[in-house]
Image 1 (cartoon, rainbow, N blue to C red):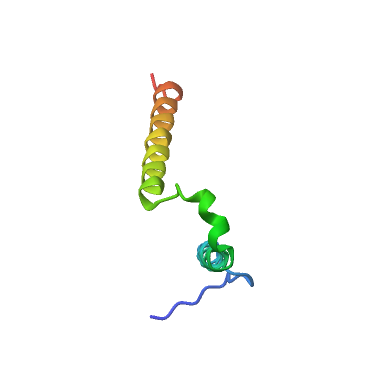
Image 2: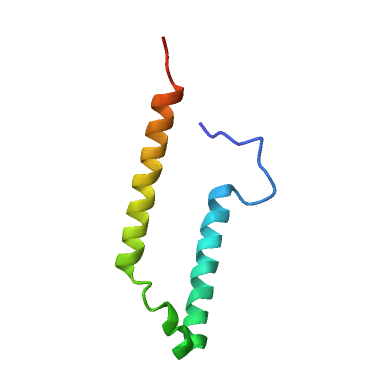
Length: 77
């Protein structure tokens, strides 16, 4: 059976906006890399392993904060 949505909004959904933002950011980063050339050697330390370490560190830190807040504020007696 076909079902139609009655609550269709005129603008793009949240997920579509995130995807579009990511694509635009990547596109601008490529343009910056092509235009910048030698001037961008200042940010030479930004390697894929640096980003991977940053993501893992932020993830572990966020998990610990959520775990501690859950243990402290979710006391059911």
